[in-house]
Length: 188
Image (cartoon, rainbow, N blue to C red):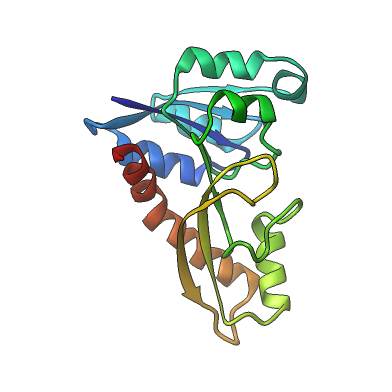
């Protein structure tokens, strides 16, 4: 049984979708959710779905090995960043090489980098009058949104679409594709 740990910072809809997808599967399960936000809704979602959930602060992940030690104890086969907003630390990446992935709400390399998340991305896509956007699932390395691309899915943008419309389309792509891509990675 493969073990998945999810990092999230906000509402946790992607985390919930992943937990439900892997519930009662024989090949993998989500064993823990970690968040940098003690008020994140992802904590409630995980609790309702009976998955261990913990919050941590900047010191625990950046200045000590507390989060690294939690991960070492959990022995994840894959660490999934699902709306996690902090830069992922090098010491964890070194301890889990090629085992950390992220979903980004744009077609990388476009609209990636520090500060490019959520509505910031969607507003930029609309401001630049893009005709399409999408999601990118990629390995995480020491630079924001520069790891090897695993999967991309696209959607069209109409002239009347707002940033909120784009956000809804991106959310749909994430719900549809993210769990299956995680499953495919774990099945290799």
